[in-house]
Length: 293
Image 1 (cartoon, rainbow, N blue to C red):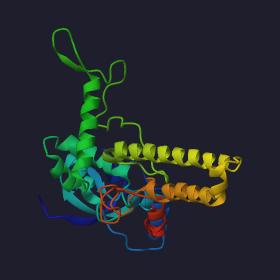
Image 2: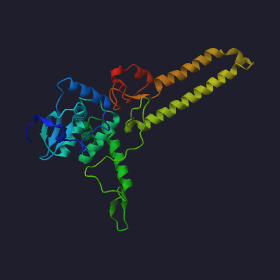
Image 3: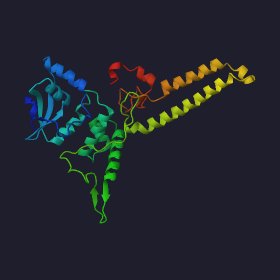
Image 4: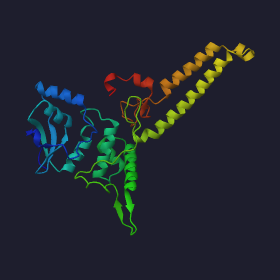
């Protein structure tokens, strides 16, 4: 492969329709900020493109590309690498691990899906290392893709296997698109719960809700004690007991209920979240505001 070459490339010559974008969507606020930077004359990092001899495939810098267009620029600094569209995809998958906007869990899952499409024979550990996610997330995504594939492949009477995805529809597109994902589970702030945490997340919420139901039942019983004239009703401090129950419910909701995916590890498990992948509301309230993205 030839040495990388940074040049000024016409924006219209940079291809963004090669399914090389590992993010699920473009952040319009980031585009606006970058556009202002371009308009102010700031030196922005060059985008990275792969040249296959015909097309320049954008691999890193999609927000900068959109910002440059918004700023009505005609040229964009670009580092050109020799390679195919697939090379651009592979590079893009790991490009934003250490720079750019923080990847959402959905972005990570899309990156894993793209990586498995390029190297399906790689182990979960190899894919995870390249994408920058846990091998457990890779395993879960691989399993969901296998399940989807089994649902769209049908055997004929003579034993042949056919793909039923496009039956009755239009021909397949040139570039492979990601298959539909399972129904999303989101946390209290709208972030996607990683697939490897979904079952545990739902189980914990169910258990917490049961605990709260029991606490509420106890609170109703305590309220009923005030109407009793027997020894139990007379000897128990109704107000103190009711306050204790209220405190228990509050503590459960504040410290025991999964509230948000860990802002530090994105659900992979770290020291801050004690390797759970999620934060309680109390812990989340202690996170610096700049990390709550």
